[in-house]
Image 1 (cartoon, one colour):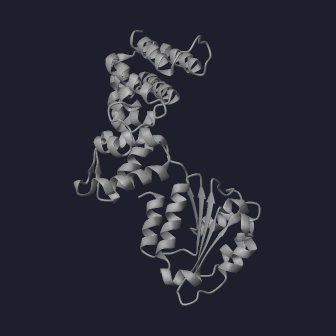
Image 2: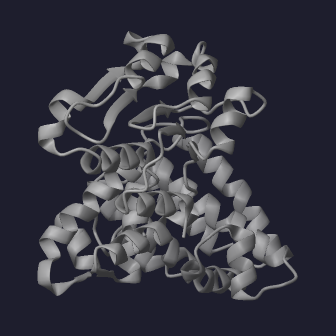
Image 3: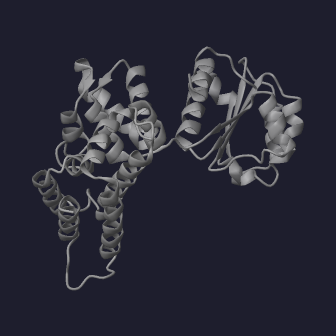
Length: 336
């Protein structure tokens, strides 16, 4: 169980702490925990007198402590939520006094987005020691498929592997957007209970056959006809398939191929760990490594760098389209 899952479980079990200092560069988790606390601690009737929401740029730490010291009216708890608390960074040390002598009937929730406390400072040590400090880091792109799978399972749904990775490729590491897309899919899929690539294509807007995931697969397997069809599709839909994303995908593929060649332990489990990718992708990468020996893969990296510059207008003459550049690059890669 991850730290955020453990925290959510405690909240649902009504094991509330007097302070939740929610920090870090992943706002989705901060909002998720805050929303859960706001929904669970007080009833709608109790919120009128016992819930206060303030913003860091509009309040001082001394005022917050005063709010937290107030007793609830007609409820067991009062709740004080501080949004955008990173604006209090210069005076946040003053919270140490309150952290050492909390008001048990108050739940103080501090959203410290995009930042974290200095681990050398006493305020951090006090909050952390008492279990009040929670820091949420952005998850790596390689971790997104697992996150999607956990989210889907928690809602009693299933998702096919390709659908999972299409979502990863299309949405990326924006967890708020990813969560919204999944919530939409849960409603659409309904009783079927399994999210398929067709659902992604119909309701999210990405083609299940023409995307960077499939382009990478075509390059891995040296299927030039498939690669050119995908690139031609990209040409008709440039906003949804930007050149820079395609180039980055191809570059990442060949850096991983090189890493496979120089890694002694080529077991799937070890390669997934070394490459920082989901095990689902390993077989395709191993196929690619067999198709592109080390010397060729190294040379291809230089091709990709050249075409990255060309995509920025360096070293090109005339009106060369991104589609033409991609076709040239893929042709060179597969015919080296």
